[in-house]
Image (cartoon, rainbow, N blue to C red; front, top):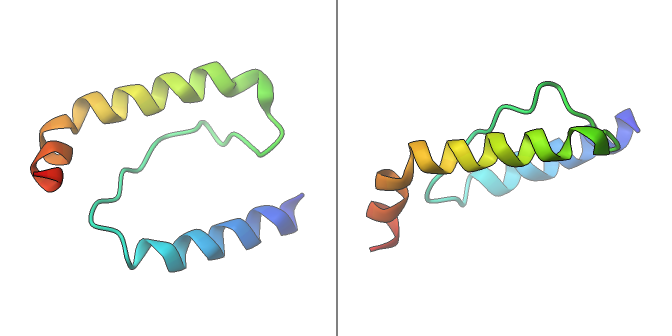
Amino acid sequence: MRTIDIMGNKISEESLEQSDFILTIATDKTGLLDVEKMDKCYQYGYMAVVQNLDKIKSITN
């Protein structure tokens, strides 16, 4: 599983270079199979978007 995490991180890093906006979301060190933390991660993502909504809107206009 750690190998898959590392591979996914490497692919993500390369994709970030092409991004207009990067939103970093705290995940409490949640792993790929930590499905019991899914609701909490959703909440973290939602709050990150709410906190950055003005910045996100300025990029999409």
